[in-house]
Length: 409
Figure 1 (tube, rainbow, N blue to C red):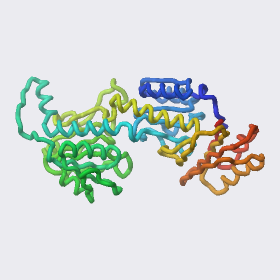
Figure 2: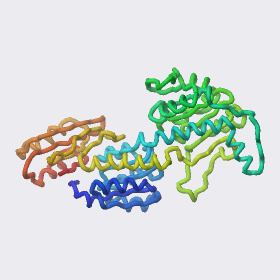
Figure 3: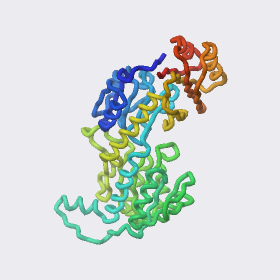
Figure 4: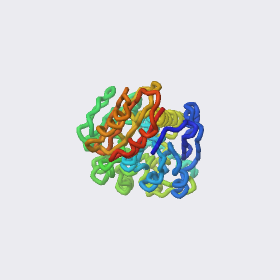
């Protein structure tokens, strides 16, 4: 049984050097019990720390597996201080009644700026010239060196980041094409392609901005690389498994692709002490960056506020509007009512049982919010009453198919 706690007693665990603006924000909302680590924790240490944690904030290295989540008996919400959520078993979290929040907007500009910079560097041959100069060489040549003005950029995935790339690329004088599995309204003069093949055929630069799903896994493989315009460039700042690295390597060796910029990889080091391994290290015409697309001070500051606010709002008032794995309920601030949050399996009869608990105790429901998905239902009920018996929580938790219930004052 989970009751609401005083804010200073709610335990918050922040890992991987989440920007300290998050700590500042939580303290401003009245949360004081905060543990802060600048690194990810190994599983054994993580299991020990998360056992009594109520809210956890992570970035990309911490793995919240089924084993870890099931050991976190008091955990009520997870905050991913990044865009990706692959590091969390979202389905297990949902079935345990734990909403997961992320930051899909705060680092879009940072990633988009990096893509534009990489486009310029690749088309000017800067990676090779820079590497040679570090060895004492001096390659002052215009061969395979181009302006980006007038060139075509193909954006795969026209979401928050892809559309930002579109705006910046057009401002630089590029012709913009995009492909998305959903129909998206063009920004400016960008033109939508009817297929990925069409985009690959016409683009001087191809940049990938897709989520990590079964649909996007290895979406750029042998056939797709073969469809790319000869002498073009490939940029990936999305997910490490969307490109078949070996096929990119072959195209680079043959000179079919003149260069690439890769920020994400199928396997990445767990820390700066671990060596980075990739076949692409052998190519001086490949810009390799250590997953830093969103790693700017501005982005991390914005992410810290965005995710901390979502966690605090869920803890304080029950709002799940932007959860990635959970029924989404938009709630107004709590107007001095006692709120009950009930998470249950989405099966017939549960709502009827919940209503019976309150009616049998002669309590009037002043507000009720309900959303469901195929697996779970999430209902928030506000009660106007001077006195509410503690037995109400026992009755709510005793309802068949209850996952968890929480009481907010």
